[in-house]
Amino acid sequence: MFKFPVLVAGASLLAASQNAFAQSPSDTESLDPIVVTATLGPETVGESLSSVTVIDQSDIKRRQPTEFRDLLRGQPGVNLSSEGGFGKTTSLFLRGTGSSGTVLLLDGIRLRSGTAGIPPWQFLPADLMGRVELVRGAKSSLYGADAVGGVVQAFTLEPEAERQGWVEVSGGSHATRATSAGVAGKARQTSFLASGLYSDTDGTNLRAGGEDRGFRNAGGLAKLNHRFDQGGGMGLTVFQSEGNTEFEGGDTDFMIRAAGLYVEAVASDYWRTRIQFSEARDEQDTFGSYPSTYNTLSRSARWDNTLTAGVHELVLGSEVMVDEVEGSDDFAETSRTNAAVYGQGRLNFGPSEVMLSLRLDDNEAFGKEETGGIAFGHQFDREHRMRVSYATSFRAPTFNDLYLTTPYYTGNPDLDAEQGQMVELGFSGRYSSWFWDVAVYQNDIDDLITYVSDPVTWDGTMENVETARIRGVELSSGYEAGNWNLGAALTYADTENRDTGARLPRRAAKIIRLDADRLFGSWSVGASLVAESDRYNDAENTSLLSGYGTADLRAAWNFLPGWSATFKVDNVLDRRYTTSLGNDSVTFEPFEYLAAGRTYMASLRYDFSR
Image (cartoon, rainbow, N blue to C red; front, side):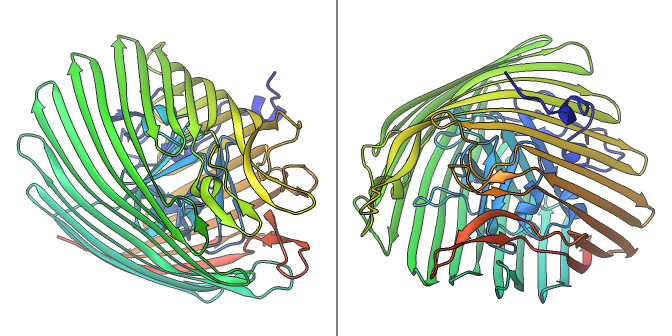
């Protein structure tokens, strides 16, 4: 049975303001924004048969994130673990699944390391993002491998006026300084945008008594889009983030790049087709105690065809992805190809809707995988709706899992993909100025890929040896009226290794986030509170990390036309806490990776438009 904490039972009408505050108070669609990630087409959050959180550009501006992960922290279903602040290695556990069980998309382009299997959360500049959609639940039937816990899609900035531009400078604690600039415009059916940024910080100490470890990041974005008169269009996106991050024992030079080209056409009144070609690179050169080089190049082509018949819709598509890796260590294989075909049907029957999805992946490394999903939704009245779904998923073994060879490790080419089965039940209410949503789910995962070593020789490999069960509850709500934006999010997850009975490592069982923002003419002030319960650092549950709570304050002032200033203080109470442990490279003794203490940041921005 589910173990519901008392806090959950008493908070069913609170939670997830993230969706509520996506637009200005005068925008009637602010409580029900359009999303495109949950299905292979646009729909509102209220229509979705998935659990979805939307963070749009007004949210991003108001919350003043220093890093991209700041936007995700405390969101429903999200557990974050990091090795310190300012560009340090970050793992995201969505609905309790593994750190490689969440797909990260940037404008539809998949970003990840083919060797480690983890998306580069810490290297995405928040200033280049205009919108984030967080879809919780198994989505392999739409997006293939690794969408076990869900999908996070970041959409980069879009032009908003005929001509616009901006310049912003920032500075703060730990010798942090940043500058960004951009220009964008629209001329009839064509729009363009170019933006760049540079940030540098001395960082903070990552362990007690340690030295400050810095972070440097330079990012750029270029976009060109054209809409056809008869519908559809084409577009080109190029994104890059590169720099250096320091850690205990060394530093890493990194480069993340994504480039994509799409063409979309209306073939008839009933048929719409879209083709996207993309390339993504993840390159990391590490120096210090354990030098290494790991590079991933992924190329993909995706073709979607949307067919409509009245209120019903069918999507048929295919995708081919080629991954190539290279590194300082030896790999028995350095490339693999994945080909897939998939389909999605959305059937509307008045107040009820059914969605069916099916996908077949054929990977030359680990064989064929079939995934599917079925979801049902029913609208009781104008405000209240329920949804229920079942979906299967899988996580692909990485190149490290399959092919890496070192003096003490040998990959296992006979590994099978991890298998997941998720069932979810949700209810929601949406009114003129507020909403609430509650979801209950269970995910059973078989054949977990686990490191196994010989206790005498220390020689290790990966094997399919474990199973896991994850049960959880997510509650979200938002209230928007007058000059107030209020909201909260509450997550409870019961994770269990079914073979040992232990909790899965680095996942907090309970997380709550509260947000409040108030507008006073040209001024706005806000605050956020995030609290997380304890977690274990290791699979054996021998190293317990204490829970914590932090409070952040922020303010903004539009003091002249086009001119604005912002100021924020994160972790106001200067709480020192950790979400993971490391091991000393000399003594091998464990130590706590410390999150940043109290930090402040101020910025000055000028926007011009015509």
